[in-house]
Amino acid sequence: MTKLYDLFIIGGGINGAGIARDASGRGFSVYLADKGKVGSATSSWSSKLIHGGLRYLENYEFKLVRQSLKEREVITKIAPNITKPLPFVIPHSKQSRSKLLIKLGLFLYDNIGGKTNIPKSSKIDLKKNYINILKPQFSFGFKYYDVQVDDKKLVEMNIENAKNLGAVIAENKKVINAKIDNDSWKILFEDKETVRAKILINASGPWINETINNVINISINKSIRLVRGSHIIVKKLYDEEVAFTLQNYDNRIVFVIPHKKDYTLIGTTEVDVDNPENPTISDSEKKYLINSVNNHFIKNITNEDIVKTYSGIRPLIEDFKEASKVTRDYIFDLNLQNKQAPLLNIYGGKLTTYRKLSEKVIEQLEPFLPIKNTRNWTHLKKL
Ligand SMILES: Cc1cc2nc3c(=O)[nH]c(=O)nc-3n(C[C@H](O)[C@H](O)[C@H](O)COP(=O)(O)OP(=O)(O)OC[C@H]3O[C@@H](n4cnc5c(N)ncnc54)[C@H](O)[C@@H]3O)c2cc1C
Image (tube, rainbow, N blue to C red; front, side):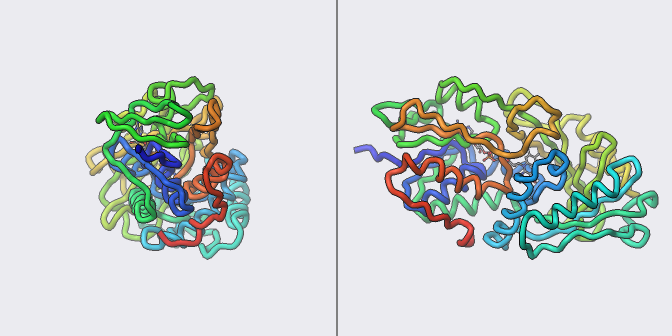
C-alpha cells in the first residue's frame, strides 16, 4: 500500500528545511521535495545575516525586530559553527538620519530583544577609528552588533538533521501537480512518480504564486510582490573584521561586509520584478552599489573590481508601499477547502525567523495532525 505521509513540503529553502526538521523531531512523517538542490535559491542569495533588522524600526515593525533579535540569540546558540557576531559601523552624515533618531533606534535594538550575549551599541569616533577606510568627512558614527551566518549551510544542516530524524528529502524533484484525492493530497512529480500526504505545505518562496496557480490550481486572493535584491563581491576593501551600514541619499541602507577570507560583500538593492526565475543584477544596480561605497570609502571601486555578483528574489507581502517599507514578516494562509486535507501557504519571511516560523507552522497545523506533540524543541538542540 502507498505510504501516507503526515506532511508534504514543497521547497527546500530555509523555511521548508526548518519545518522538516521541527516536524520530524516531533515524530511526524515528512516528505520534502525541491526542484533543485536544497538551499540553492533565495536562501543562499541573502546578505548572510541573522539580524534584528535595525532599519525595520523606522517602519514601526517592533514585533518583527523583537522576535528577530530573540532568534538571533537562539540561532547563535544552536549553530555556533556557522555564525559569528560582527560589529557594524554606521558612519553619520548631516544629510542622513539624525543622530537622535539613530540613538533611539539603537537603544531599542539593544533592549527589546531581552537578555543577550551580543555586545551593546556605542558611539564611535571616526577621527580615530577606521581612518584608513572611511572618507575624512565622516568624523562620527555608531557601532552595533549583528550576526553573520553561512546561509546555505544553515539550510543544509536543518535538512541533514531532518533526514536523521526520519524525513525523506528529495532533490531535483519538481512538483508539477498537487490535488486532493480521497481526502488526502496526491502529489505528482515531473518524473511521473507520486507521493501521498495528509497535509500540504507550500514553502516555495518566490515561486509561491506559480505553485498556487500552476501546481495546486486554486485561486487565492493574497498578492505577493517579487523584489530583486543584488549583491556584488569585490576583493577585500580592508583587513578589519568589521561591517559598515552605509546610509544612502535615497534613505536606503547598503551593507559592506567581510566575506570569506579575501572578499567584501556589498548589498543590497530593491527592484520589482515579474518572475522569480534566474535573477541577475542589472547595470544600474551595480552602479548604485558602487556609488554607495565610493561616497563613503577612501578606496574607490569600479565595475572592473567586481569578482562575482548574485541576486535573489524577496517574496514580499503586497501592501502597496515602497519596496523598502514593505514588511519582511511572514504570513500563513491556511486553506481548508477540505478539512481532511489542509493546505498551508507560506508568504514572506526571513532567514532569521525560520525557526520560529517552523514552530508556528506546527502550532497552526496541530489540530489536523494525527498525534499531539506540542513541545517545542528546536531551540534546545544544536544543529
Ligand atoms: C537579497 C536578499 C537578501 C536577504 N538577506 C537576508 C538576511 O541577511 N537575513 C535574513 O534573515 N533574511 C534575508 N533575506 C530573506 C531570506 O533570504 C528569505 O526570506 C529566505 O531565504 C526565504 O526562504 P524560502 O525557503 O522561503 O525560499 P527559497 O530559499 O527560495 O526556497 C524555496 C524553494 O522552493 C523550491 N521550489 C519552488 N517551486 C518548486 C516546485 N514546484 N517543486 C519543488 N520545489 C520547488 C525552490 O527550488 C527553492 O529551493 C534576504 C533575501 C534577499 C532576496
